[in-house]
Image (cartoon, rainbow, N blue to C red; front, top):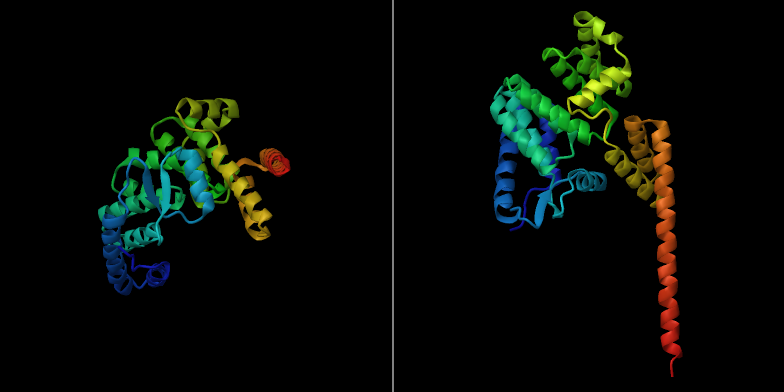
Length: 300
């Protein structure tokens, strides 16, 4: 079955949504979803060997492979299904149908599990619907997958509120400090700082070792994923090799925002050394192949 929906169709519908024209956007998006779901039923059924996604770029695909360790063949669908379901979710949010919005955003996450904006928006819908545990779980899942400092900071800020409301001020302090380090100007981070100062100022006397130790005890990583940072830097190296310096710079800046300058420099050095070793191995293998070929020609 051929898919008739294109990325341009989805972008066109998104433009009405962005302009606040729900009356035009809603039926347009709903028709596109109907067509896409017919295609999904016919062509995109997952198996033990194959799964289908709509990743935005090569980085997301690589990061998914390394973070999720999914051994299946990953097939890119021909249009950004994740964006379409996200648009549908915001149509439902506009009509205050939060359950349908939650279901649509769940589909957006399914089609692009590396887009942390979807996860954070879905977390807020769960919170609005009274499911605090799922709000916290989705926020935690962002810490493991965030590819920019702001997403990671917002996830830590959410978890800080969760721990504060759970009467664990020490873990909340750890979240607050990590969030401040990543994105101090973010409004959610500032809101957490304000709550901590007003409600549990004494907890801020704890040392970093105490606060982060408690956070680790609660099963929360005390830094964004190094695997994601490695993927960013690997893709930056590929972009630089292809002559796309702008893309290489953007990816490197994102990695630096996640793990800091020093760790970033260390990883870049390791990646370059690995690339150089691989190039040497390939050159040596090519040389051996040439020698064997010449030897074959030399035989009587």
